[in-house]
Image 1: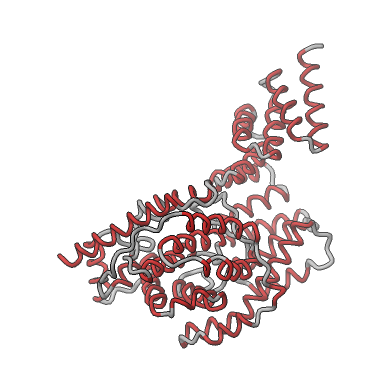
Image 2 (image 1 turned 90 degrees about the vertical axis):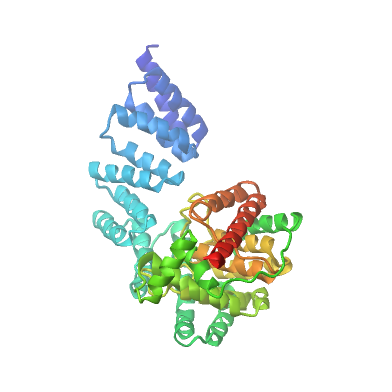
Amino acid sequence: MTSKEKWFRTMQQGQHDFQKGNLSSAVKFFSLATEISPSRVEGWVNLGVSQVEAGYNQAALVALQQAISLAPNIMPAHMALGDAQRFLGNFDSAFIAYQQAVELQRTPMSLNKLAAIQRARGNPEKAEALFHEALRLAPGFTLARVNLATVQVDLQNFDEANKQLNDLEGLPLSLLESEEVNSTRISLDIYNRLQPSIDSALREGDLVPMKKALLAIPENLLQADEEILEGIRGYANSALSLSPPKESGTCTLPNDWPLIEALFMIPYVESVDAFLKTKEALTNGIKPAGDLLESINMERVVSAARSIHFEDLLDPIKAEMHSRHWHALATVGVEKMLPGQFKMVKNMSHSDTLKRRAEPHLVTGTFRQFISEIYAKLPPGLLRGLVVMMAVSDMHAFPDGNGRIALAWMNRELEAVGQIPAIFTHEGGFKGGFAEAMREARSTGGDLSSLVSVTTGAQQYSQDFCDQLRRK
């Protein structure tokens, strides 16, 4: 048998196994084909595609990049490369690969994938245009139709979202497409129930209507995401097994502590001098915008969180009410935010793109079950605060701003036991050491040890900051 015949038969066997769903065998045969004839691009493309399907995404990068080096204009290679990068959480690289695929061939599928990655990167307007183009090419492409309907939520076109979701009724949707439609419908229902009371809370500071609206949500809309809760239970078990850090006496914080904590949330400042300079600018009437606006909003959140009856947070309804109120205060005037509203479509955290977050329609039920079954049974203090931080992050209840809400809550846990709140520099915070410790907690079954270390270091930084501020 010649080398050419052996390559052909090996490829045939790989394709047969791939079509039958025997992916590991397909990978084996396609890999053998690339060894027999390394200059034949078809083997590398098929190997890369089958590796992506099998979940071997890191290996797929090598095969697909080899295919592209041999033949840069093969569209499926770029598509599969985009898939591998997306599954690895490399959204910028996935965008480049999908964009190249579309430049080579504007197919409904390539347009849909480019649109989806644009949406994930925070460009819903561009995504909407691409979904429309995909549907012009293939009007019966139901995945693009579902995506077009749900992206209306990102664009805050809620009436249009409802209309398009209604138009999908009766169509032969796949199971995943049907689940996406159902999830968005439930989330929109809860949004409509709560929006008037959130407006009232912002306008008048009255939380009673929100409490009533939360109590009125039907039981059938309150299912929980059990996978997310199971992960949170791991953090709670770690909190119960660790020795709490030594509690200090009640610390006397500066009168403008809410502003200090707020300006360290992003962080907007990272030193006493920068804080004093910003405080002077605010006193002189500077109009907050951008990061400064988001930071100043957090001053109101910190003040509101410090003023509540802390025991309220042991009650699922009141805890949800307060957290929604804090989010509303945090996001007033910030573009593309939905103050006080839980997410209505899937989202992610850019600090850990591979971590699955709670399904949108399950967030309310998951949050309430977390409070009643986990949070309320833990003693107050740093360890419970870290469980809150991980729980809020893993649920990712709000479209954005989850980390800041969780940090404000965690710091109130510290104050409740007489400890100084933690403030984080850029290096130690959500884009640095704290984020790394959160990823470690997830990868070790919930072990909070690294987070304890990072947070106690941030508490020491707070103490040093206050001491330096007094000397100034």
